[in-house]
Length: 123
Image (cartoon, rainbow, N blue to C red; front, side):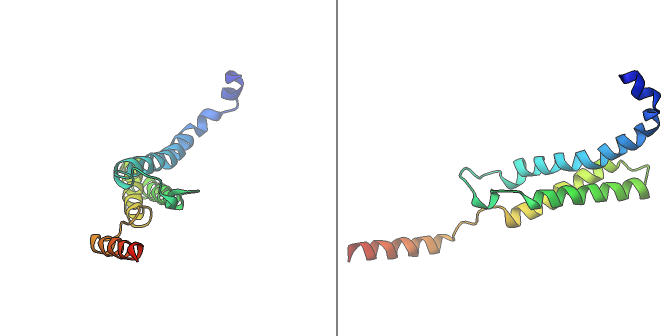
């Protein structure tokens, strides 16, 4: 079967296929790395903001792929995969920190809330 596929001239498209993989795959890995090391670093409990599809991850991977493609077309000597990784990692780190992490209430608010609930329990 491989001989039949090779006879069709698929080897002439190998460079395009490898370029496509180099544009799409590295930003996905960058998002996974940013999620693990930057965004979700200290979360130990369930975060309801993380349920469902993570549109910030998709947007970051797409942004990294677009930047990688533009780099490949504009500057062929520059390693486009590395540029895509940096772009996706940076975008997802910022978006994840802004929109996906749980916000804890300030200590003053939690102390006031605790005092209020204690007072109301004793009445």
